[in-house]
Length: 195
Image (tube, rainbow, N blue to C red; front, side, top):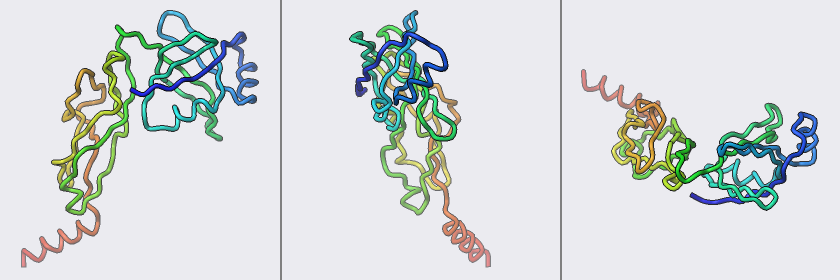
């Protein structure tokens, strides 16, 4: 898993007004939890750009006034109108404690359904997994090399390696849809065959 450093500062006051003042100065308030104690901090908003607006998952080296914490982003709250980052929650990683986190899906192989003219529709871009920090994958690999027209690949088909998938086993990850033009051609063929 890739690592990203975020440098932050401890928060003295935890009121709504102080959080609003921090946001007005382009800082994002946050909290780190998971080791018994909570650490309230703030960091420059620009440092979260690579972490938030990326499909990848990072282990974050949270440097709060010289104290380093290994962590992962658990939640990010945004303003409903202007999409400004309002608050972040981090979970401290411990080598002996499993964590639950969403990992991006990576498709491998070429689908025969797509070659035949179908369209690959992604139902799950990320999957929720549970693993020890050392076993967290960069992505969940999904092989689509036997995915035919009109068929789906379900979560149950993915074989995890040293981690557990928490998504519903019957949920589709991807489907190859039959385009309208291909459907009408198939219907014409079926009608022509009956004459």
